[in-house]
Length: 125
Image (cartoon, rainbow, N blue to C red):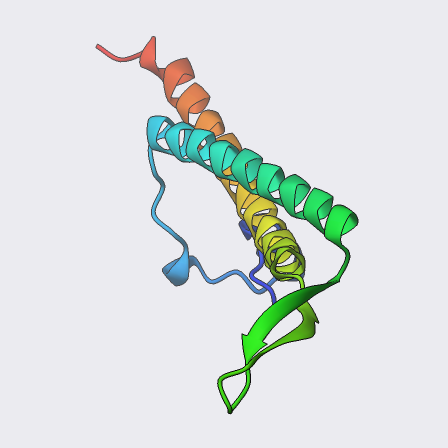
């Protein structure tokens, strides 16, 4: 599945369809969403650091007690769950950063639209 393109990328490639363009949101909504996204990104980076510390301390494989078919407990080596958390968090972080780039572009467009409206507001009666 191809990656989602921003409006700038679509315009530069010549593949933008105006009928499918998103409706412009207010600058206030965009800034609130950016603030929330920053919080989520900081939380995920914190989780990545904790998982990284756990993997360094315990290793990729950890020993776990597992019951076999007879009901006896046996020690086995399994992949550290922190390793999976780290992997999933890094992929989520990548997509969230991409989403943040989209929001930055949307904010720039909204600010340009707002300043353009402010320039002409002095001529209104």
